[in-house]
Image 1: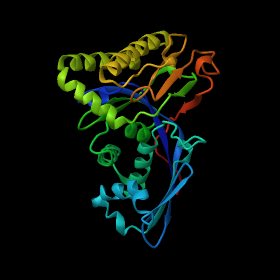
Image 2: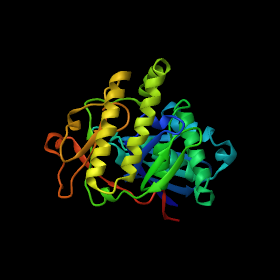
Image 3: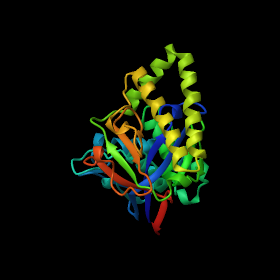
Image 4: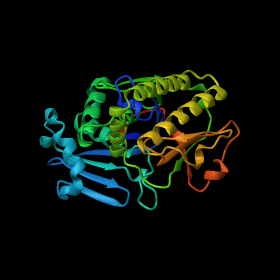
Length: 310
């Protein structure tokens, strides 16, 4: 069996999605992780990540992520399965070996859990729960799950964070036919320390944190409800402003050159300003000139996990 899993992007709702009831707008994007499942004498996993090739269980700590995923799935009795899984996420890396910021770890988890638990026979919401629990376990108990939901279900969706996250697929008429570009920031920003900084700030700024959550949720709802590009631009400008203010407060800046006001919708995505998303007006084919050297076009993936061949 060959199955593929798309990447994912978060357009709005940074940090809020880690809260109970916090909202985020996300979508699945190409490229896709490829997962090949073949009969074998015993369970084996080969991971192809950029230029690196990792074998479970021969490579020990280098294959740690595969080991932790297997340990999170005791009910599947994974170790007794007679299959070999080759999971290839190399399309999620650039020529230098740096991750492109398209949610490869979530797509990898979705692909492996789907293969190890025969996801075709499972209730989609139950599969979502398993994937999120597994992803959180390998991330030290944290992780909102928006990236898992987007890669699993595909398309665009309104994500609601919490102990039991929810994903509602939505239509975004203002996004149809528009070019989407991701823009690399100056340096990588790890999500775990960024979320930890947010949690530390929240402990001593409870009123501001409550106001942030309300404002962020309102901006996300406005984006989801927007019927045209002008309404979406206003909502995204508000989401961008909220992110910049919060980033300054927690010491993880979310402002960068691609935040400048223009005919484009541009804002930071995820933790800090490691990456930005720019969405162009109707006639735009190329990215904004100020980011043309570091921008890469991406495309929304309508399907989530897809079985390509049995």
